[in-house]
Length: 268
Image (tube, rainbow, N blue to C red):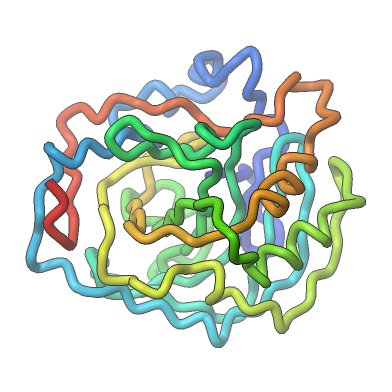
């Protein structure tokens, strides 16, 4: 999950994230990166607590308006306006979608930021929602319930995802620093799986600087399917990256510490 210090059209995108030589260097400039509630983590299902009180997520993206794609040195972000709503589940407030982005690797056996029982997926989608109780993102960054990120694992299969296809097609000629207006009728719901009742949740952080510990993570159990061709084209976004030397743009897992991971379904 990537953010910036200054607000730009309602979202944050840190422009100087360096994945190589590595995230282990981040605490020098961003002390929060050495905190005890950092993300991502490995979801060890044998240690997850099944919580029967966790209800199905309510996500209504009918009012969300995709605005533009911004390309950074290691990632791209789709900025979203309007009112895409997230509530229920483990949440006590209503949240609004402000952006989404992906993390991926250069191979099919790594790329997602979160792991499940030590196993990675080729990519992971982060849908970033801000708490409506906070007027500005800068304020949300300083509160433990400031943001909720819905994480979705990507799985390679035979069915192309129509919305993902439109995204990777739009990225084909973009470079670092470019911005492109995106079609407002983009169907964001197809980037989410059908089943919103099964998920893991835990308190954590942004996965890139400033690594603020202000995130309620919700990781959906059901993945979405994209094709091998689609994921390969995603990897081409920074295939010529001379800054990082790799197309990988995920942070290694962080210690869980004393935190508890809950699930809305029996998973152990």
